[in-house]
Length: 273
Image (cartoon, rainbow, N blue to C red; front, side, top):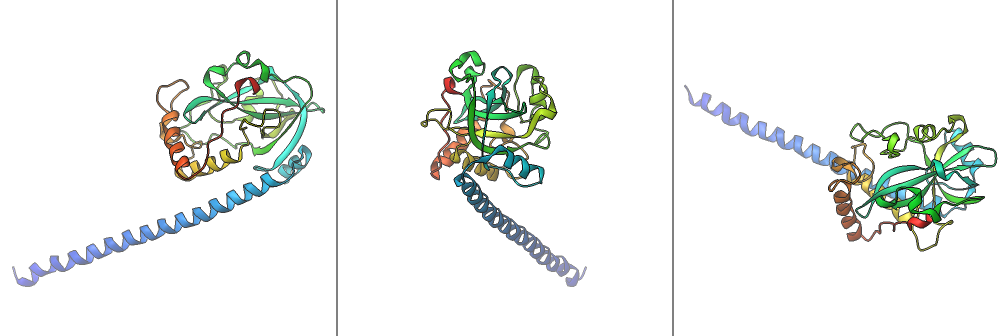
């Protein structure tokens, strides 16, 4: 074997190493560019949400017209009046500062007989049933002001558990099933939700439409890009009442938010939801 034969592998090795370095550099540059683009997107989204929150609430009919025309209704401030159908409320499983509980979605029957599902806020796990919070079972004509939220087109991810309709536990907000499970005709149901603000409750409480909560949700989505999961749940999902699961991940997210100066919304008083 000649010296030339020995030299050939040594020459090829630096070339191969150089190619790997260039590939790694290209990947790092792409990731850096992607992060900058997401940062600009996030800043624009937060600014857009803040502007919508600062606007005066518009009648429900205006949001309906915008939705029918294919417009973006997310986080637009809206007001509506009607009577809550308290015996048909639906429960969306969630966490608040590590505390397991539910967001209470109550149908609001409008004067024309149509139904608007209103997210009235968070209650702890032990206060899931209405009899544990009777003062919150509002009767008579009510006016709600809040933020419009679009109907989900489908299940966010295969990782998210199926909704347990029999136990009234929803892991994702399937409006059609929420309505159908309590005998409400789809044709009567307005095809979006409203996250209520603190108008019907004492001002010290944070509502489902808390500005800080919106910022927190946005950041949680940033922390788990591409997963398709609900904010801050990721692969730590467990069923309600589990000793582990969302509460542990939520505590970690809360620590990050506290470090950068963002608050997590206070829980609603269960008697006032």
